[in-house]
Amino acid sequence: MSTERKKQTENLVLGAILTAIVIVLQLLGGFIKFGPFSISLVLIPIVIGAAKCGVKIGTWLGFVFGAVVLLNGDATAFFAVNVFGTVLTVLLKGAACGFAAGLTYKLLAKYNKYAAVVAAAVVCPLVNTGVFLLGCLLFFLDTIKAWGAGLGFTNTVSYMFLGLVGGNFLFELATNMILSPVILRILNFKEK
Image 1 (cartoon, rainbow, N blue to C red):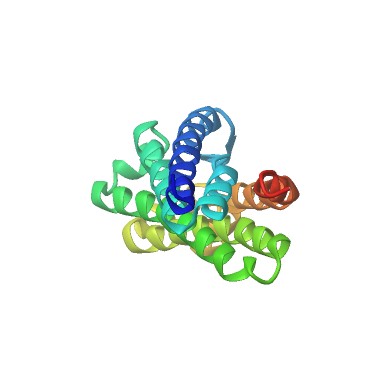
Image 2: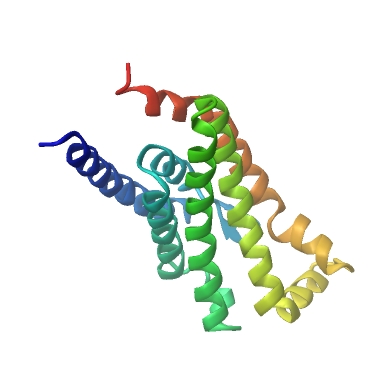
């Protein structure tokens, strides 16, 4: 078997294993909530897949993450408001975070693998949360305003950052930052 074919096979196998991990972690993550939303424990395997297997696998893993969010009921409140906006936002935020993590790693790894992993681990939750917030602005602004007002927020933007995604984002970012050295060891395991 050629080296290129072997590498493709290894990427497919690792991609399949990480797909299963993403599904299981997202289903289990549904039990851990910060505010109204589940914590995205799946961002670490997305970063691993994006860095080890490339942008395509990273995007796939993010898409799978989004599909599980849609299927496990995490998006129920948004479905009631706008089905199309919910599906588009959730699938796009997942695929985009995997794509961005993979692209970030690819661009930086040739200079410094540690910096590339850390940057990919930071970019992943930033893009995930950023696309979610954009989807909220585009499809759910009136609902978000009402939710914020119901919780005593007089400013919708402050509700979006402090009440809607703040704790969840900080947890995801901290988790990714803390586990970045572990990701680097996983990526370097076979190379030693």
